[in-house]
Every structure is written in structure tokens, then in C-alpha cells.
Image (cartoon, rainbow, N blue to C red; front, side, top):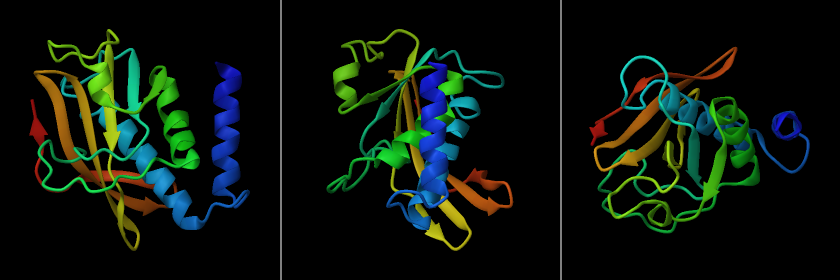
Length: 174
């Protein structure tokens, strides 16, 4: 596990420093997605103050049509997360628990609306929107019929990187 984390960190660092075919825009997108997911699982996880009870994270491999809003009007064609985006999210989430990349969240929800992996949360991210040194990232977390949240984070580029500064727009909680 430690070797995997080191390799992922090296891949993210290489992409961020211009190695490979990534662009600065790709690096910013990777960073804001990772920061938003960590904020979701550590702060807005629906269990109040303190750490969330999740032991595993099931993260969608593609953009989530429900990120930010549990009832989207038009999901359209959704793109797969890039290798760099997945690596950045994995590096950020790995200290909090194991990550499994999934295609369809419905394959991981029981008839009772709980994740099939005990102790897990299903995480989704939407396409980030940038406006200069600010970004909006829609996210979703599902851990049961009465355990879910959908919101959009506002992030700011600082000297330390992209930092979540608040929530933009409505919040939905089940």
C-alpha cells in the first residue's frame, strides 16, 4: 500500500511539474477535484463534527451527473475522469481509507439503499468550472437512503494550492 501511495504521488507530481502530456489546466482540474473530495469526506460527510465513519470509498470513474444536485435536469454525455484526475483523487483520499473505482453506483447499492461494501461511501464529482483563480466543483456522497449529500464547493487558488473556501448554491441532504 505504501509503495502504491508513493507511486501515485510521483505520478501526480510528474503531471503537476509538466512531465508527460498534461497541461496547466489539467493540473488545476486535478487539484480542485482532489481538494473537493477530501473536503467532502472530512468535513461535509453528513455525520457532524469529527471524522466520518467510512472505512472505504467507492468513487465514480466518470463525472457524476448527480454531483451538486440529486435531481439534475440534463446529465448529457459524461466524460471519464482522466488518469491524472484519478491519481490526484487517489493520492488525496488514500490516507482516509481504501479507494475502489466504480462505473455505476447502482451496482453498489442494495435494495435497502445502502452501499454493498459495508462502511463505504459512494463519491462522485462533476466537471469543475474555473473563473480565474476561483473554481466551482460539484460533489456527491451517498452512504444510504438517509445518508447522502450533494453540494458545490467554491475553491480559491492560493500560494499553497487550491483551497476550499465555502459552498456555492444549494445543499441537498438525505
